[in-house]
Length: 351
Ligand SMILES: NC(=O)c1ccc[n+]([C@@H]2O[C@H](COP(=O)([O-])OP(=O)(O)OC[C@H]3O[C@@H](n4cnc5c(N)ncnc54)[C@H](O)[C@@H]3O)[C@@H](O)[C@H]2O)c1
Ligand SMILES: O=C(O)C(=O)C[C@@H](O)[C@H](O)[C@H](O)COP(=O)(O)O
Ligand SMILES: [Zn+2]
Image 1 (cartoon, helix red, strand yellow):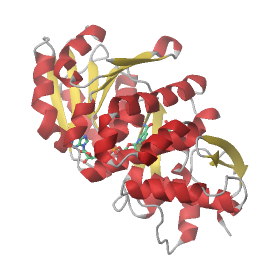
Image 2: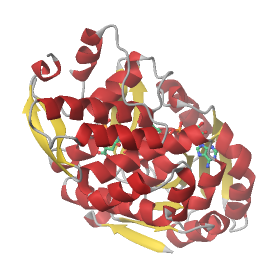
Image 3: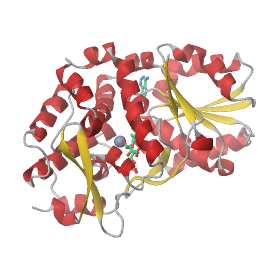
């Protein structure tokens, strides 16, 4: 088992990473929770593979479990789903001494985490991430949210889990497209802070090679995120680097109505596009954008996209949460493995 401790004073928590950990989830939960009721939130795909085993493992420890299964996909990260969850919690008489577990990808983690942050003004929750993206990124750091029609994660909170349980064997049931989507965020970690990780992924042959070193890859990404979040929990400075590629990426997701591109795909385009611009402006080492294309192609990730209405993208960028007083905080690479935050206006995106 590999373990990390996110040190945030009285809201600190552990991240546990081990193959097969799902089989003992009941015991892991028993170690950190002495209440009785658990609302287990998941989606229909994850439920199909892991729903009954997880429920059984929890019930074997004496917990009273209510499994709530939502539709899969980004559109589930909505106020409608929140209402469904709140109503289920009330029906189950879930109280502040009880627990929520989010078992799924980033959609279930972000939505269920926000439900946990707000129901009864906050009840304890555990992240049990099942997609690559959720295991390397979204389950850690406490950003929980829902989307609005106007954009991504526009309503949310910083609300940390009490524990993160990661079993990389669960990635075996991921469709290739979803696995590669998670690789978008993994590549981000290499680009912003770990050239060695980037080189490993660049030289790997694809999914099978990555799976040979998967626990180390997950540990490396979670550790980078842990260090950043410990220094800037509330995203007022350093944490913005975790948003590399997201200014454009989130706008692309929204432009295509959250249907055409997944999050990892959209930020892949965002990472390439911003690097192309920053390289042209002499802010980034020459050749970096080409290396980004090469690695994205290896994982079947897109890097460019035809946009008819560029104004709309730029308007959405104005809603980016890193914008303060009309100043855009953008993340650009110095070179692979190193980045910085720059302050710009929307002119940056207009040639
Ligand atoms: N909070 C954060 O810090 C943070 C970080 C990165 C991304 N995000 C958010 O995460 C979301 C994307 O997460 P995602 O890519 O996990 O999407 P997702 O939750 O939609 O999962 C992707 C697909 O994989 C399926 N799936 C998940 N685990 C599976 C498994 N083990 N076997 C088979 N199928 C499985 C799901 O049912 C879904 O169809 C976006 O909303 C993004 O904004 C949040
Ligand atoms: O944890 C962070 O901070 C991140 O920026 C991680 C991102 O990968 C993630 O997509 C996050 O949800 C984006 O946050 P937002 O503040 O831009 O909504
Ligand atoms: Zn992201």
